[in-house]
Amino acid sequence: MTAHTFPSHRGVMFYRCLGCNAEHGTDDLLYICPRCGAVLLLEDRRFPELRGKGGTYWRDLFDARAAAKRPALRGIFRFYEITAPVLEEEDILYLGEGNTPLIAASPTLRRLIGRAFAFKNDGQNPSASFKDRGMACAFSYLRAAVRLRGWDDVLTVCASTGDTSASAALYASYAGGPIKSVVLLPQGKVTPQQLSQPLGSGARVLELPGVFDDCMKVVEFLAARYRVALLNSKNSWRILGQESYAFEVAQALDWNVDKVCLFVPVGNAGNITAVLHGFLKLHRLGVIDALPRVFGVQSHHADPVYRYYAAPEAERVFRPVEVTPSAAQAAMIGNPVSFPRVRALAEQYRAVAGERAFQVLQVTEQAIMDGMLTANRHGHTACTQGGECLAGLRAAVAAGLVDEDEFAVLDSTAHALKFMDFQNLYFDDAFPSEYGIKADPALVNAPELLFSSKERRGPDENAFVRESALRIARLLGLTETGGG
Ligand code: F0G
Image (cartoon, rainbow, N blue to C red; front, side, top):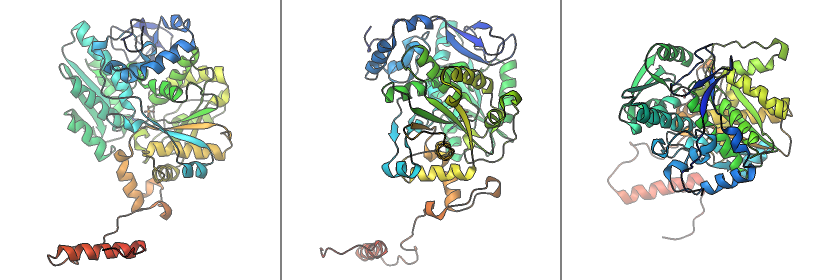
C-alpha cells in the first residue's frame, strides 16, 4: 500500500462499556451501555494485528501520508487504521480539520516562563476549535449510517458551551441531505462569536436559562427517549476523532515524546479522554516508546476533576460542583460526562508511566486571563482555555513539577477571536466581581484616538494628513529624515 491510496485494511469496531466491560456492536449509535448505563469507548478487535507491523512501519506510513493528496486522508484520517478503520472513503467528511500547527513559544515568552514550550493552535480548525476533529469522525460515521442503513432523517443534537455547537452546525450544514442540526445553549453563557456560528450555519438554535450542565441533562434525556443523534463527547465517535490531537503532537515531535508534558484544559473531559487514549494507543502500537506526561488544568471556579485527584487515593469520591463564572467559559462545567473515562484511562496511563504521568492542576481566574493576554502579547493566538494551559504550566513550574529539560505542549483549544469579550472586559478592568479578575496595567491595551471628529474640520485633505502624521510623529517620538 502506498501512502496515497485509501487504506484497504478494515477493523472490527465495537463499544466497550467502562462500567461492566460489556461489548456492543456499532450498528446502533450508543452513548451509554444498554446493560448498566455507564459510558463507552470504541475499540477495534483487530488492533492487535496492527502491532505486528512494528513502530517503524506506522511512523513511516503516517509521515508519508502527511503529503497525501486525497482529501479523505489529509485531516484526522491520516491515522485511519487507528481511528475508525470501518469508514469508506466516500463517507469521510473533510472540512480542513486537523494538522494544526505547533508553534514554539516566542523567545521572550520562553524566557519569561522559564521552560521550553509550544502552543498547539487548535483554533486553526475550520470552526476555530478542536471540536472539529471529533465532528469530522462523528459525521463520517453518520454519513456511513445514512448510506448503509438508509437513515432518512438524522436530527443531531448537542448541548454546548459554544464550540461543540459551532462545529456540529458547520458539519451538519455541509453534510446536508437527511442530516440536520439542533443545538442547545445556556443563554448568555456562550460568546457572541460562538453564538453567531451555528446561526450562520443555519442550525436550529435553542437556549435555556442556566449553565451547560443543565443543557447537558436535557439533551441526555432527549437522547434516551427520542430518535436523535447526540453529538456531545458522550458519543464515542467524537473521542476517536479527537485522539488525532495526540497523534499529531507525537508526529510533530518526530515520534519522540520522552521528556514531553502536555497541558490540557478540562471541561466535559472529552478532550483529555482522547489525549490519554490516543497516547496509550500509540504506545501499544510501538509508535512511541515512552508516554508523555499529561496535566489536566481546571479553573478554581469549575474544578471537579482537580478536586477528585487532590484527595488522598483512599478517600476519592467524585462530586459534581456548582460552577461560578469563568473566563475559561468553554470549560465551565461542574459535572463532566467523561469523568469515568478519565478515571479508567488515568489508571491505565499511570500503570505504564507512573503516578507523575497524569496530574490535574487548579488555576485561578486571574492566572487564566493573565495567561491568555501574556501569550498573545508574544505572538500567539491563545483563547482563554489556552491561557488556562499557560497558567497551568506556570503553576507546575512554580510547584517544581516540570523538569528543566522537559518540553511542554499547551493546547490552545480555540481561536483567541472567539473570546474577545473577555479580553475587552480585562482591558476595561470591568470584570464582574464574581470572576475575581483585576486588570494588570502592564497587560492592558487600548486604541488612541488622534483626532475627535469635531477636531477634524475643513475639507482640506492634505492638511488633515499632515496634521495626523505630525501628531503621530510627536506621539511616537519619531526622528525627521528631512525628506519631502
Ligand atoms: N476548550 C474549549 C475551547 C472548549 O470549547 C471546551 C469544551 C474545552 C476546552 C473543554 O474540553 O469539554 O473536552 O473537556 N467545550 C464543550 C462545548 C463543552 O460545548 O463546546 P472538554
